[in-house]
Length: 222
Image (cartoon, rainbow, N blue to C red; front, top):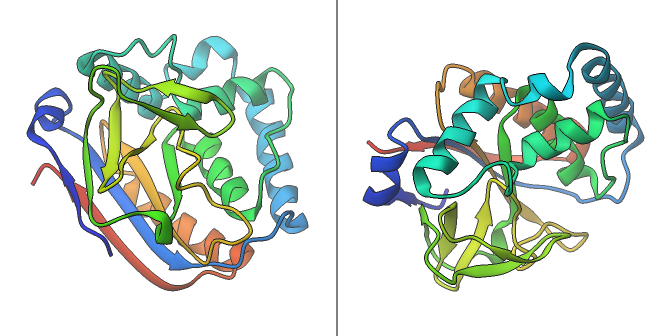
């Protein structure tokens, strides 16, 4: 497991931050039918039981929104990925179909409210630091073009920034050539659910993405 260091500036702004990380080998497929049966069922459940106004009150989303404000970013303008996915589902739209790894990550996200990063581990250079985006710092976000990450909690490696709770970068994205992934479940508030959610993620990766050779670890300010 790669080491993730959370810098002092971020821990002061977000003292409760915890990162539950999963590293494993996978087999990436464009479409996994059994997985999409689960996604469709969960999407129907969400649409029937949650309103758009209620999404931001999900405890995990609410904590992440407060973290963005503490770091200097407007969460209404730069929405969390989990919030954006839930708004899409509640409005009656289907989740995007990307590949089995990204799709199962999105399933966990709409089920819990956690924003989850999914990275091709072989594209990450060196160890990882999590900090706050600097002035004029940006990267090409997946499906978003250039993303201004100033004032946003951000992951960096030796080549620069590559991930936030709003959108991950194209540079480290998971595609059909990916052989090993790093999944990061980001909790900015209570971390009571993290172990259970991590276990579910391991189960889904095993069942729907041929996950093997798992390593798991939780990183925090301590």
